[in-house]
Every structure is written in structure tokens, then in C-alpha cells.
Image 1 (cartoon, rainbow over the protein chains, first blue to last red):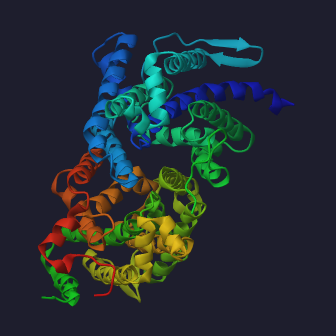
Image 2: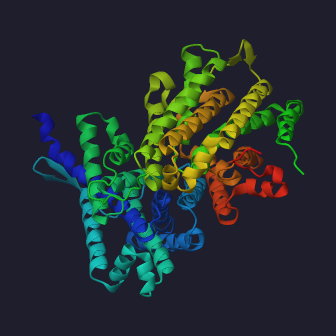
Image 3: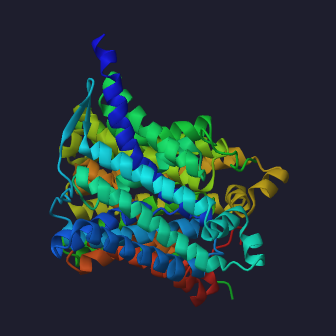
Length: 294
Length: 315
């Protein structure tokens, strides 16, 4: 069967795309778990990370890894500042205001990026050669390898950070109970700001890798946000492992539906998934049920 | 001393001779401000009065606009005949968007779903080329109102003004009735509202449907005002514009929707607009309003005189 023989290829490229979704969903989950605020401007922070890397790498001509490190530092400081100076003052306000604030920050960023780079399509140069490897019938590109390897490395680092280090204990304590963490002497507002910074930097890594394989435009953020949400809801909102599993599953689903049903599913899977999942199984595949019912 | 609210009638009456003073461009901007009044009112009803994070307003707006435009272009219907269908389609889309809310989806979850719904609609306009002209867009023929051609912006202005007055009065009545008080109760505490015997589900659907219908009418006005519909008009930049209207005007305030619509549509005309400028300015504006004026400009107006304070009981 011709169609079935393509299945491994689709799964491989789906996993590769899904790893990027996973990374972005993970960075959103970190912010959500730490602060119980969903960052609706996160997609634009992801795009901002890619642009920052472009400025340092292409604009100033710095080596790729240096440019990336600088971009991550900028995004960390940016995320930190947004939480400290914009979110923290209204932290007691209703969810509506918090969501609006995050959204407005995102729009401001996007507007700034469009003003500066709106008319050009930018491709981040890859710092590695583009090769193609054959594994049986399956084509694997260096893009796939680098993305998968890098994301797995990051996940391992994150896991070690959370499970083994003292900082991880602080993070876990605050994830579990903010009041409890405050009672044992953890500086919760500083922690929140640091998590926003960390989330932004983590997302920026995803943005940089995304900008290497697709053209970079200011609208990247909007698309990223929807895909990240789709991955988060699929895996279960607020679950770190769920975000990763959801991202990979989303990538594979998108490719399979796009090939076997209709190519339009590549474009709309990200929109359909959160709608269907939230209607049928709001807790996602791995999440706990926390949705308010009346 | 009580000054009657009937004095508010002076505002539309005072606007009647305004077209004599304006050049066509200024008239067009004023028409745009008028058509965004229903858009803001519908959005504010769900987000401000009901307190639910529904981000699908642009979807109702686009559906209303396309309903009107397609009926005129392919069926040859006169514009006035498309207003009610645009409202019905917008209202149905609103009811559809309220289904997750009835299933207990709240807060960010609802925001995500409605955001996805809005994007899905934009994708539909792009893909359904036979009806919408795809991403190139479609031309909207000259509008007619009972045989009277609305071929100048000044003529459209009077029709828009009449529609806006009807919508404002209708929504004002709705908010001051038991419906409006039920919305307020649901916003304050949904569980308590349900415990008091308020059928919360019914009111949520009603608010979404009314909001969607009103925004749909705004869409029909948009269709003839710009004369050309393309999916790019209903993207995320449009969403930030509509957000800016209700946030800057004042959440949960009818007057806020009106003030916001006027300011947010007229202000960008003052400076030359580059791509991205609108997003940047509206984003900063919303940030400043949330930080320093959480109830929006309407709260400033309310300080001027008690007449401007909005109340949800008869008085």
C-alpha cells in the first residue's frame, strides 16, 4: 500500500514539528503554572526572541551561539520587566485585566516589530550544514535532528533543574502553593518575575529555531500562540509533561490529517484542536479536571 | 437635582447637521466611528457586563459584514434587507460561541476557544473563494435603502446614526431590565446567581446572542462603509482595535463603548499610520488604561455629573 508506506515519514516530520510546539507549549506552561496567569502575549515574545537573535546574529554579525545567548538574555530581562512592572501592580485585579494586560503587551511588541521589519521577510541563517539522511525509506534532515536533539536536551536540563537542584525545590513549592511558599520564606513576587523571564527565554529558543526553518514575520507570534495553546489543551492545561506530549501529538496529527484527509488540515488543526478538546475533554489527555462548573 | 436622561437625545439631534461641516474624508471617519459603536457595545456586553473572556468578537463582525456583502453581491438584495440577516448570523455565531461557556469552560479556556473560533472564521473567508473572493476580497455594490441610493458618506451617516441610536437605546433598556441585573449578578458571582434562582445558562446565551447580533449589524454597516471586504480586515489587528475600544472607553459601560469607539477610530487619523503603528499605539494605550484608569474614560465622565453614572435599576 503506497499510502501506508509514507506513514513513518509523516510521523518523523510530525515529531520534528511537534517538538517545536512542545517547546513553546512548555514555555507557556511554566509561566502558567508559576503564576496562574496565561500569557496571551507569549507568541509575540517568541517572535521577539527570533528577531533579537536576528539583530545580534545578522545585524551585528556575532556568531550564532553568542547571538542566541544575547537574545535569550534580552528576552529574560524583558519577561522579568513585564511581570515586575506591568503584571505585578495589578496582580489582585480580575483575570480579565491580567489577560488584557498580557495581550496588550504582546500587541505592543508586535506593533514595534512590524514597524521595524514589517516589509521584509527574514530567514535566520542556519549555523549548521543542511544535509539529508536516509533511514530505510524515511528522509531525515539535519533540521529534524537539530530540533529534536536540542529540545530533548532542553527537556532533560529542565527536568534536572526541577527535580534535583535547590532552585527546583523552590519552583516546585511555589507551583504547589503560593501562600505556602511565601510562608516558608520564598520571595513569591520575585519568583513570578523570574518565571516570566524564564518562560520568555524558553519560548525565544523555540522562536529562533522556528525562524530557521520558516520565514520570520511579525505575525509569527499569533500563529505560535494558537499552536502553543492547542498543544497545552491537548496535553492538559498546566501539566509540564502534558505540554510536551501534546505538542508532539499535535505535530503528528497535523501531518497525518494533512496527508490522509485534506491538506487544509495542516492550517487548521491548531484551531480545531483546542475547540474540540475543550468541548469533549476539557482536562486534556493528561491534565487534572479543574474547570469551574456551576 | 435630577436632570432627566432624556437630555441625551440632544446628542444625536446635535449630530444631524454635522455632515454640512465636514469634507468627505472627515465624514468617512465619522461614519467609521459610528459603525464601531455597535461593535463596541456587543463586545462590552459579553466581556464587560457578563465578565466572560470571549475573544470572538471579530468573528461576528466579519460574519455580519460578509453576510451583508454576499447578499448584496450575489443575490442583488438591497442593503436594508441584509441588516436583519447580518444580525441573525452574528447572533447565531454568538450563541455558538456561548456553547463552551455553558459547558463550564471559563476564563482562559474560553478565551482560547473563542480566539481559535475567530481565527477559524478568518481562514474560512480566505478559503471559501466562490462566496468571499478569497484573500483578494470582494467588492460590495452600492447600498440602497428603500430605493434611496446610499452613494455618499453623508447619506450613510444619517442611516448609521439612526441604527446606532436604536441599538444604544435597545441595549440600554436591556441592561436596565432584569436581564442586565442578571448579567451583573453572573459577573459578580456566578454560583451565587445560580443559587438565587437566576437561570444563568439562559442569560449567558442571551448576552452572547445579543452581543453577536449587535456586532453583526456593525459588520453590515462596515460592509457598505468601506465598500470592499477582505479577510485581512478581520485579523488580530482588528481584535486589538476592538479591545482598545472597550478597554479605553470603560469595561461594562454602555457610554464607555460609545466614547471608546469615537476616540479609537478618530485618534489614529491624526497621525500618519505606518503598518504596525496601530498595534503599538493601541497596545500601549490599553496598558496605560489598565494601570492607571481601570474603569476607562467612562469613569472620568461619570465624575462630572451624577447623570452620567450608569445604574442597573430603574431611575
